[in-house]
Length: 318
Image (cartoon, rainbow, N blue to C red):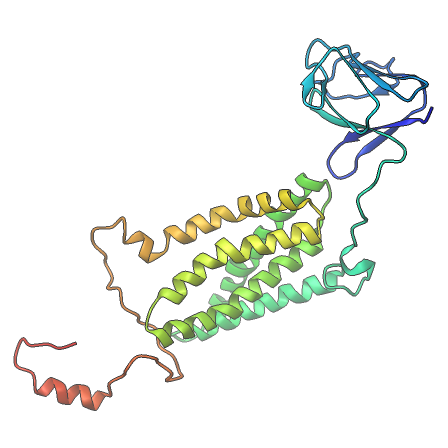
């Protein structure tokens, strides 16, 4: 008679108990062979009996929160096929054989190398400093008035550093709840990389806005960023770094990014105009570019003045 294994499924690390006796009692009372401390488990919840032929019989002893065998509540369950999925109150378990096939080993990000970007604190610190530099540079280039170093420092600390810290804390806490461990360095690196990609694509989007004389590229970028890129980045992190299941990673990535996507869509002027009867600002493109690569036909100042002189009072042309 081959000993069986009882798998208690928990967050991150599961517990395994070898059933080395023909009869094993499971429950919350201390006289059981396997003790489960969860309050939804009865003092004597079930008995697992294995006969010489290899058949397994599981008898339900609980009146409150009775054991579910493969999703069904039965007084007794007998089978020769393994694994068997059990539900004891809030506890999910599986009865396995010693020869149960295991999923393939997931590769550790960076393969354990301390020089890998997701495994060394130096990379996280350098990326945070690079994000602060990029944010400060953007603030400097967007400053129309005389730059004040106090305002620049306040912007870097309150806007950039605080935002990065908030995202790192929120995602690290979520990961702790999911897999019962802290992954500060990979989360920090991921947040910084997303921040840098955003600030790299934003100027390119601004040039497209100027090129097409339309805000449509900006609208598409803002919506696509939160509807496509952010969910994809979160899904990639959850599957490759945290090693969650594919389906669970997809659901979590959509759940995490959906609040940002909703805010981005509702702040889109084209969407807001659907709910407003009057707009306080005209819908035309006001951006400029140092490069004169405008795709629309342009008019010089001299030509504009000459055309204006030929117009009668009150007359206008496009």
